[in-house]
Length: 401
Image (spheres, rainbow, N blue to C red):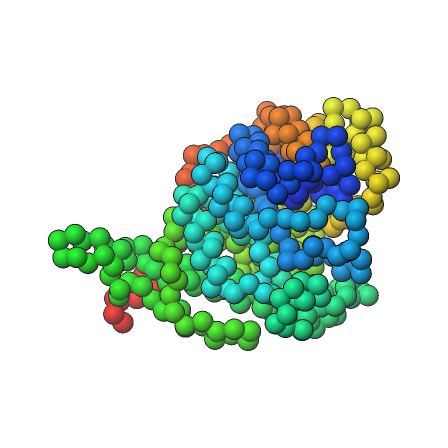
């Protein structure tokens, strides 16, 4: 029997294929409706998925460096803010972890931190975040406050060959650090609510964060009291050395994109080397492999659906693509589990069709095959991925010190 793994999903508009909005099963008129996102979350929640990431970007063209990304008419355009969507979904779900994507280059780190702490409160400990480094020229133009940043992808394909991208990853690391520091700024027992004395807050247990980094500085405490998880689950996507080091130093969980199960060993080795060099967090970094999936009942139906999508628009992706039956996806999950990952994040090519197939047909078969970790009843997302709830770093200090 393989080692058991967790299963997550990645939600993005009408699906991860750019032509998914044209499918008969799609709901293109509802992509910005509350009902659409509630329905997707309900499918994942009832289907036993550990958590769902929610994609986001700060321009019409998303995170594409294509020159016509902002103007082309054959792509679904327009999206809702991922953190706000996650907060809306929190009371509408029961067990599903909610992991919005945030770009670290433009939003203020203080606002990001308080938004995520709020999400952790309203979800009762099911909040996470996927941090994205850098920005496109179009995203920078929307903010108008900075001109520095990547303009094109390096011709070599290697992030370390572009100083602007490397700097963006350093900035993302600072943002992740500050998210943790602000989450720690309130100790668990800072609120006393003593009606007789009229003392609501023990101010000595709320600590100023004194942070001075390369890109910004912060002096002060969060406005949000300490949340159920202490720190929301911090996650990042990585596929090269620089992102591996960012994840190893600052994240709880990393998504990787192996070309197949055989490639997992090399990725895990590189992540381990990065962790040995830079990781100060006590717990090992959790590793989830990404798969983009299109699921039909027969191989012929899956191939036909994929051909139709590809005729309308060509998919460019960093993830392995699996087009086939539920059993084909289960076979991929088994191979990845055998290779040593902690979980798999499935990117549905079409929404809601492939999410429904994952919940109704893939999850039950994978569970029956002994591949998936069962829900252990732990109350928070961090605990469900095997991470402890840490005390505030300031709790070790003497009060008033």
